[in-house]
Amino acid sequence: MRGPRFRELTVKRLRRGRFTSVQQLIDAIDLWTDRWNDDPKPFIWHKTAEEIITKVKPGNATHNQITESAIHH
Image (cartoon, rainbow, N blue to C red):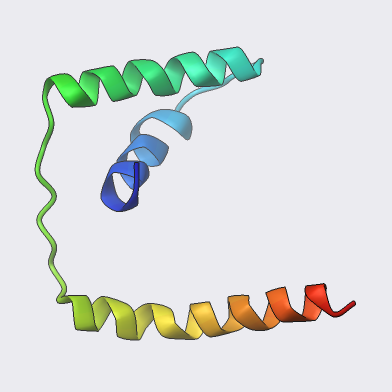
């Protein structure tokens, strides 16, 4: 599960839920996934791949710097 589908799960299920155990969280994810698969919705991209890559490059660079710093300390 990646990208838009993960966002839908997060926004429409996980943020709205309250889970007191890992098993409750797993059950909620499984139920949401089953319902999604019963009635999937296509995701329509509103940006080109180039626009998306340009936007995420600064975040990736920062992430790489943090990761490298953590490895060397």
